[in-house]
Amino acid sequence: PGEGWWKLAIASRHPIVEQAMLPLVHTIGDQVPQRHVIATTIDVGSTLVDLVAFHVSSKLWWAAPVVHLRSMRRAIAAHGIDGSRRPALLVGDANLWRVCLPGVLPGWRAVRCGATFPSWGPHSQIDQILVRGGVEVLDARVLPYSPTSDHRAIVARLGLA
Image (cartoon, rainbow, N blue to C red; front, side):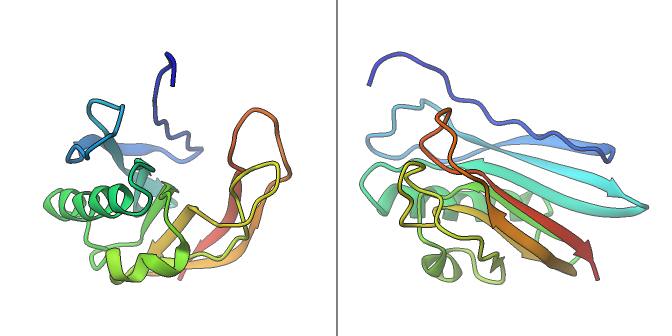
């Protein structure tokens, strides 16, 4: 409720060689008029890696997240990110439990980090890092509580196989 803004951003120490904003379908009850995902291609030591950042609606409990994640799957496939060509990551607020993701995003591996929501007493990991195509997880964890968000941040150290 109330006024505010909604934004996504990607910061990288590696060169971003391509970036696109891909629209998601609108879901019932979502206060954000048009959601997008940011699809980037990053040059990591001469290896191109696809990275997609997202934040899907939490409305209607699980229904809106599933609708948005399926829309994201179609949008990134149409953009050429299918995970088979090169290493790829999906990162963001899925508003959906990690165990539900294989049914919505087949072929992606969810990184187990720990509970992220709510930040003051987390019980569920709804913030996700998903990997595919030669990305290996070296370490992943949830950061300590911060009063600046209702979610705890996650961080992962990844490698290329």
